[in-house]
Amino acid sequence: MTRIQLSPAPAGLHGQLRVPGDKSISHRAVMLGALSKGRTTIDHFLLGQDCQHTIEAFRQLGVPINMVGDTVTIHGVGLTGLRQPAQALQMGNSGTTTRLMMGILAGQDFDTELVGDPSLSKRPMKRVSQPLSQFGARVLTSEGGTLPSTVVGQPLHAADVQLAVASAQVKSALIFAALQANGESTIREKLPTRDHTELMLRQFGADIQSSADRLTITVQPHPVLRGQHVLVPGDISSAAFFLAGAAITPHSSLTLQKVNLNPTRTGIIHVLQKMGAQIDIQPLASDGEPLGDITIQSSQLRSIDITATDVPAMVDELPLVALLAARAHGTSTITGASELRVKETDRIQTVTTTLRQLGVQVKELPDGWQITGRDAWKLQDPVFSSFGDHRLGMLVAIAALTSPTALSLDGAEAIDVSYPGFLADLRQISGGDQQ
Ligand code: S3P
Image (tube, rainbow, N blue to C red; front, side):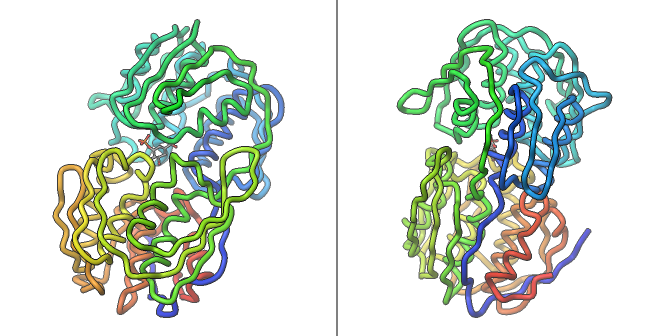
């Protein structure tokens, strides 16, 4: 386990930064490239461990994939061209790889075993296997509904499915099953979740319609998918760490370039605006996903209330919303976020522990937190833990920016799951000496 020192940034965060490619879009680009005919090139691909697991899984399924820097070239085999892997597919820490693969593998003519790391092996998979069964799919989970799981490949039929949880991973798994079904399928969501799968499938040639309220998706089966060029925009979930850092660290003025501004992901920007952050957005021309430059300056924030309908557009940023609340005037309430209990860690619990270590008054709720902001941290213990969760590790680094003294972080290696260059990028904009 790696322990690092995290420095304060008394002069604030400054300059311009292009964050790595979006994690969700990088995974999907590999998947659609593999399931298409012809060549797909992906630029600004995220080199984090999660996305590397997606690449490795498709190599084992017989798809030729080359990587040079952050450019990935895939020689697609088509929707029916995958072949049985020689061994179980290793999903690492990646919930997205696992759940989307379940939908892809469900309609193949072979069986596949999926395994993961200890954290992923605790996460719920019945939320995918149950709705997939409505397409006739069979995913055999371990007792407790977890990995290791075996996807028994077999012919799928069309279905009309209502999702029980607001999850883009589950929705995407069902869309992949629907592509292999014997007729038109419909997938209905309670709340709109990120729609990268739908947007990218359209780019690759699939017939997939979304209703105006984005809640109903209609999928036609067996499209001929054609290889494409995909430019992955910057990950707003990675940019969010620096946006939060700049908002709460005095004297900051920072621009994050070419960030994905898909409205299903921009909840953190609306939160920052509502809390009184000074933020300016310059949209940029794009053929695919919307993107733009975001400039932010530090300012005094005020408290905020977040409820269930706000959650999907900022589900991965809620730990940062909690950190912002911890530095805002007043008491914030975040509810409707029980999904955080089944992320890489129980993030309601791990964020509560972290904020309390910073001296913040936090009430842990079953589905969120009540947080009273303070003007400065009151350190209870300078040694923090990532709890093996990449987003918690990066959150501690952002908290350190306004700390009176350096903080230690145990388990810093977890950051590589989604943002291997995070500490170097933070150093670049903070003038700090993070190791
Ligand atoms: C993701 C969906 C979200 C998110 C995860 C990535 C995706 O998970 O938390 O980091 O790429 O579809 P849920 O589907 O569990 O909400």
